[in-house]
Image (cartoon, rainbow, N blue to C red; front, side, top):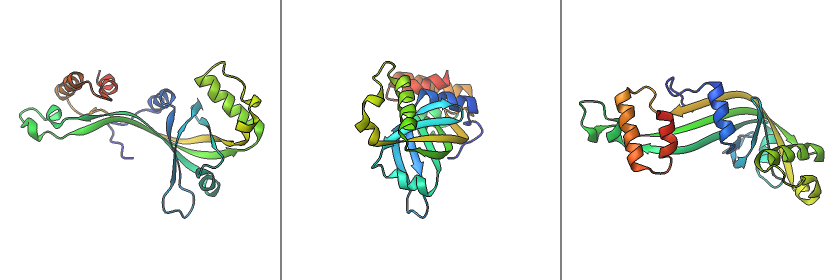
Length: 197
């Protein structure tokens, strides 16, 4: 993705965002495919360089990962359309302001390791459940479930964060955008406002 200097997040900002938004798209290019395999999935950021998740065994991503373990985990959250009138430069006809979209996006380039052994799968499931639903029953008591999935350990090799909120615009433009978002109150507007504060 294109990341302008004013939209670039630090590694710490990107990881904090991923920690708060543990759902994304896992993308595996494989080898010689017309298009990559893309799978929406819940995941767990175990630490700054490790992601764990599990998927059903029939998932089409497994052959692509076996062909090429280099994968991309793409995480993007709420977005907000920004009316061009709000962004018009001072002295410019507001009808000629350039609209845009505000959003956050983090891409983790990773090396994937398929986890097929029962103990490894249990470790991943227990960690995910412990994060999302502490106190949930032990997945070891559900052997049929366990046999129907495989785990993935992703070793993060690169972190790229983009936080596109007009960081290069002056305070007046950003204040107009904030007023517009507040008045509109649409989907994604509140999340965008937090980045303008």
